[in-house]
Each structure stands twice: as structure tokens, then as C-alpha cells.
Length: 395
Image (cartoon, rainbow, N blue to C red; front, side, top):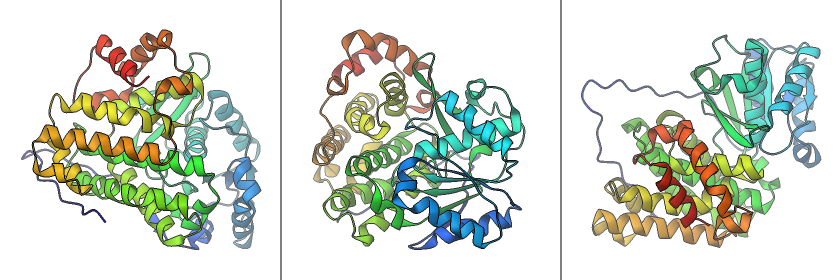
């Protein structure tokens, strides 16, 4: 078991630090608390957003029954695909209005949660979801949000992010705002047992990427550093075990905590180049976000470390790597190698080429990545040529 070491970095005197977080309910069997949360938030006709997989697994009917037991009249909507599309969010908003709903509940992974946030933005602000790309573009207060995550990695249930696929341009846009931090997240590790193995691996690597990118982010602070390092150690120690023993609840609970801590870190410290790049590949090819992160992250670590490798010493310590005792550069390379090994252990392809990315795509991907909001907090700036080269190393 690796040991998480506290960061030695400090916040500059006089710097204002904010830490956004929803109310968190955590524990095996806690899903029923979502119904109580809807009541407390004044709901009567909640819209339950989910997907066909959660319906098939039985979780949607369990939550729907719990809502009805509290005297609520839920409207269930599940016309979603992975990586929520702009037109799907528009359809969800239509269903919300037609159902005369008041509170929104997301039961699912990051795609369901992002779609729910998008519906909430449109419910309060109208227009097209693509109008709200960027920071704090949605100005009217949105309906209350209750989240019930079914994966262990996206952190969307605690974040101020909403990621949407722009189907016309074939890319993903990032919507950021304090209003998008949900009111309540109910984390029940039971739901993780029905994830497909590939999704378990993908979301786990997403959590790892959140932890590492949040820790080295230009917007990091002592409040985020602790959560980021905890997440890095927990994911690396536990992810493989959840694949080998999918019904073992102790490790599922640990991964649920890792996802939560990584989410708390990145929603406050923001992210970096791995996510800026991953958003573009996912938007182009409609691929699982965490799988792309698993390929890109080692390359981004090496890229960032050439500018300043010092933060990676604490990450190496959190991973229990002997290289933490060496130079910062040695520590950073060891972290990149450890991430790469974990990605291989859980079945992630070696390169983007195996996912369908072509040399001809790289200039376009680089252009969009440099515009992504996550690049603003990456610790190293990049030119278009450097970004193309970074994509090429990941092919």
C-alpha cells in the first residue's frame, strides 16, 4: 500500500482560495437519500435522467420506487448516448418542460451527469447549450441538482464542469460555472458493481488523471492538493483489484472515494493538457474519455516535467515510488512510467492510432486543444507545433 504525502507547496500570502463542494452523502445503500434530498429541495415532479444501461441494471427502477415512496412524481428520461450530444440535451430540455419538472436527478456516469447539467442550464437560460461555452456564461439560477453517480472516476457529480459534444464541429466544449456544482451528491458504491469492465478501467484512469492534473495545475492550492494526492494513491492501489474482484465492496468503496476526492480536487484546481487533448479526440471519434486520458497522461507528464518537475516528487511519494528520493526529473519520469503500466494492466491501448486517430487529424486536434479551457491551468504553455508533436508522440 502506498502512502500519501502532504504537499510542501504553500499558497502565496494574500491569495484568495475558494473551495466549491456539494452536500455529500456516502455509503453502501445510500441511494434512498436522493429521494429525501429532492424533498428537501422542494421538488414535486423531479426529472430522473439516466441511460438504458442503468435501466437494464435495475438501478433506475429502484430509485424511481424510492421517489414515489416519498410522494414524488418522477419523470424518467433516458434518450442519451455516451459523450452527450448538443441535440440530446435539447431533447432532454424539451422533456423537462413538457413534464413540468422542478428538480433534476442524474443517475449514471459522467455522460448522464453532464447531460443533466446541460438540461438545467437550458431550463433556466434557454437557447442552445453551445451558447454557454466558457466560464460563467449561464447567468440565471438553474434548478436544483441531485447526483447519483454509477461510475468511479468522472467526478462530475461534484464538479463545476459540463462537457458537451458539438456535433457540427466534431469537438467537445467545456462549460464551467459555480452554479453547475450540484446541490447534493449521493454516492452508493453498490452501483459500481454493474459497470462493464472497460468502463470501470476508463473511469478509474479518468480519476487518476484528475488527481495528477489538479496537483500540478497552476490553480492548485493546499485545499486541493490533499484530495489530489489521496486520489492518486487510492486509484493506483485499488483499480486493478476492482477488475479482478468486481463484487468486492471494500475496493468498490475505495474507488468511489478516490473518484470523489479527485473530483473535489479538479473542480477547484481545474485540469491541464491531458484533458484539453482528450476532449478533442473524444469529440472527433466519440470514444470513452477515460481511455483517451490513459493513453495521453504519461506523455503529458513528460511534457510538463521538462518545464518544472518538482511537483511530481510528491506524486511519486504518493505512489510509493523509490524515485521520489532522486531528482525531480527522475521522479516525474517514474510517475509517467507507473501511469503507463497501470493503463496497460487495465487494458487500455498503447497509442491513439489504435483508437482511429490519424496523422492527418493532428493539426486540427492541436488547434482545438489549445482553445480548451483546461489549457489555461496547465503548468506548461504550448505552441501549436508543440501540441501537434505531443499528439504525435501519443500515436
